[in-house]
Image (cartoon, rainbow over all chains, first blue to last red; front, side):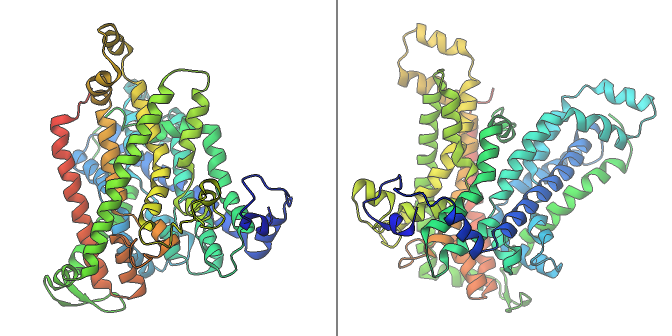
Amino acid sequence: MTTQEITDINTFILPKSFRNWSNFKEVFAMTDMNRLFINSMIVAVVGTVGRIITSTLAAFAFAFFDFKGKKFWFSFLMGSMMVPGDVLIFSNYVTVSRLGMMGSYLGIIIVYLVFANYIFMLRQHMMSLPRELFEAAKIDGCSNFRFFLTTVIPLSGSILVSVFLSSFVGLWNIYLWPLLVTNTNEMRTIQVGISMLSSAEQLSWGPIMAATLIALLPTVIIFTISQKFIVKGLTAGAVKG
Amino acid sequence: MIKRKSEPYLYLIPALTIVILFVYYPFVKTIISSFFKVDIYGNLKEFVAFNNYLKLFSNQNFYRAFSQTLLHTLMYVPISIFIGLGLAFVSNQKSHFSRVYETLFTLSMAISVSIACQIFRMIYNPSYGLLAKTFGINIAWLTNKQYALFAVTFILIWIQIGFNYIYLSASLKNIPEDIIESANIDGAGFFRKLFHIYIPMISSSLFYLIVTSIITGLTMITPVLILTEGGPQRSTQTMIYNMYVYAYNNSNYAMAYTYGVVVFFLVAIIVAINFSFERKSVFYR
């Protein structure tokens, strides 16, 4: 749709003219859309992989080991869900800038590297794995960490897919934190980039909506195809109470 | 189960490091800093006891943000749960289309708040937005101080519905069929079943949703930041938004920390009240 058509009171939802891809071309010409897209991709994928590493390891410890203070450390990790993240943004901002991570991917990702809900889900799953496997591996002289890599991880396939997808959607959509820690155009994520686009002075709806569509596409596609997995990832734990 | 002293701790180290560094440490630091004067570089200066709090509580604007945040939460939580529950009942009737319903109802979950704001910015436009075109109402939703907060709340309700729907419909499906069948045989009407079977059976999910959405409601900021910047005439200022303004626009870090602590305790109190109701009324299978 052309901008005139969008702002015309008489056009309803369907436009008279499709300008083919010109709105998209304009977006790519006006902003570094590729870069924004890639930035968001890196944040979402690396952040998710990091979350999976931290939560599978922690879940493994809670599910297969008996150690001093197990209950305490478990509630310690779960308790992190109770502190609303937005209240902490400012302290975290200072920490991240002291660590010299301002405006880097690591600075965006690091505060998201643990999501207690995933530890809970993975622990529930690992506790349901047959204990005999572990005993057998022990007798064969398999080290605990090798057992983790070669047996526990492959057996957690479907739950890891749910965790991966729901975490990807979540991290793709974050806004406030990347807005704070990125200060150059090259490092912005797509969510931040788009809201900057529309607050720029020249407001033309066609390209903005084209950009919005590009930003929506990955999560909507993932959601439509793999909705079952995501729903499992989100509702596991809570529905059972 | 194995007993080896140090090994399990090794597996916990990554998760614990992050949680301590980015949840518990900033939390403690926020509380401590709220009792100090803080310079513009964020360094603590002198101990001022409760002065920051007194300053905050004597600020008219604080009460405005406080009541607007509460009003937002009071609309956001019940409406989004009510609609989500309604949709869950609709799609619970098994039909060929329930897959389609499910995808459609949950799709709003895939959309981020910032993108939803862009879409709604256009829908709300008073001269050519969808609302103006369809209903012919020329209200400047976002720049009229009577409507702006409702407009912002509506966007967040819209996003939350998908999430609530999927939770509630999953737990509705978990209700054993025989309970409902026997109620049907006894001739129970819909409302009878609703209050005596459905709601008690899904109360743990409802409780979870209420608590989590109270937390998101009380810490709302993104749409205000993107769409209204607290305006018009401060009518959409929320507590976290004011905290953000103190920190990033005014470099008044002490007040920002104090605001953070107040919001945290407000959330904690309201969540604790919820938990005290939980003992009485939530039924776990």
